[in-house]
Amino acid sequence: MKLLQRSSRYYLLFSLLIFGVIALALIVGLRYSLNHTSDELLANTRLPLARELAGRPLRPRMEIMDEIIELQPIDRVTDRQSFRDTIIEMYDVEEAELELEPYRKYTYESPIGDTPYRISISLSTVENEDITRTVLGVVLAGLLLFLLAINLLNRYLSIRLWKPFYGTVAEIKAFSARQSVTPAFPPSETDEFTDLNRELQRMTGQMQREYDSLRQFTENASHEIQTPLAIIRNHVDLLLRDSDRPEADYGNLQRISEAVSRLSKLNKTLLLLTKIEHDQFPDAAPLDLYSLVSEKLKQLAPALEEKSIRLTTGLHPLTVRLPPALADVLLNNLLGNAVRHNLKGGQLAVTLGDRQLVVENTGPDSNLRGEQVFDRFRKEGTDTDSLGLGLALVREICDRFGFTIRYDRDGRLHKMTLTF
Image 1 (cartoon, rainbow, N blue to C red):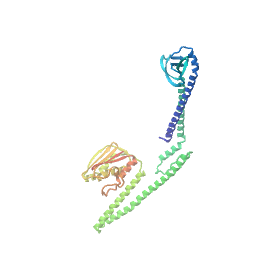
Image 2: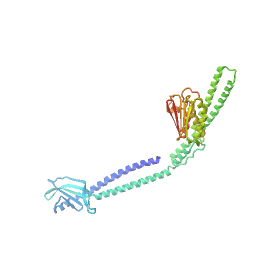
Image 3: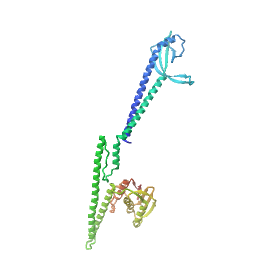
Image 4: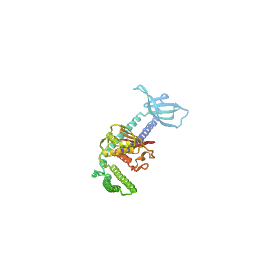
């Protein structure tokens, strides 16, 4: 929800609360005023009523003008009197039915002739109710007009005053550190937006400079490291060809050669991780994963045969958006690990379809659980061929392109599920 919408919601709730309090106070005050007026009218009727009753036959209930008079004989007269609201059932001539109508009743005690009576005078308050409803309707109409005005004002503010802010947000969304173009933030007469644009201009410029510096360092470091490694490897190969060397030297030179190969592989893998993290790859394109997985399994056929691994496949056509180079890395690590860490005479099952690639293989028991297998330099045992970066590469690729990778293990059965 946008900031302006949230503030508008608070304004609306506050306005409803204020208008509710005002409407309630108005109704209470209006009822009090109308009841007070009715009470004065009833009290002023007391003397004229006494003269009217003195010269006519008395009944327990009488209607004189718009008032209803009720008489009840009592033992003696006191000063007690009261005003209260009541409901009286009246016959409606037009509707030809009984209706309940609101009345204001004034009760007092007074003698009529020589007999003490409790006298009740009831005055209809239907008009008072109509006045109250009218006033309440006017208040509610005013509330609706006020809320409508607030909403229109907020829309105007959103379009006019916040336009530079939304322009700044659009520039930030389109910004990429790989681009050499610095974002151009829209000018604003609002000091806060001007300060925001100034700071964003500084930050984006710094990000571009740091990105270019890191990219150049990565490329230079990779290139410079590969050169001495190649020289070391060539010299080691020359020394290994020397037949006049003791057998122990051959073993040492072989270990040096293996260490150099591992260092070269590590350098290339770390460079690849850095490129993935900084999006230094072409945009994703539709890729036929079925053909690529089939080709990789053919390439792994000699390794499968060497370890007597039984292969089971269930491949169905599937197209995903991924740079071909990264798709190759992804499959090489998933399928290569499933073969490299498999058991002699083990099993390998590859399933492709329903937006998933599932690789299941037998392998040695492992203490690694869940997300641990995707940690960098995390590996089990003393496998010198493993750098502990293969599954870290897989996780990085999945994170960059919105895929999910999950590892499950059941005893010696290992399962990788890649969901596109």
